[in-house]
Amino acid sequence: MPQHLIDFSNESYIQFRDQLAGTESSGIYSVESKSGYLGRYQFGEPLLQDLGYYKGDKTSKNDWIAEWSGKDGITSKVHQQNLWEACGSGRFPSV
Image (cartoon, rainbow, N blue to C red):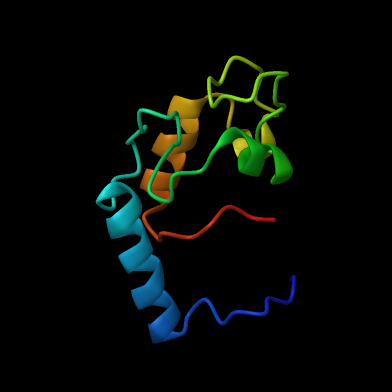
């Protein structure tokens, strides 16, 4: 199991996470901003590419025209949003 610098079960972290989600997306997992950021925490292509979920493309936009890697079974942006919402824990994806 990876060691984290943050105690993800700590109450102050949970409050921070929920406040961040409220500010970014009103806590809604399935939201997509006008700029193309996805989900509760408004992740963009570069972050999901760094995390290994999205293969990326040659554009500088969050246009989601490239393929998904299939990591954790995620094969599309809709699938990504639905999976994290079903998780219901508000956890960040595994790194």
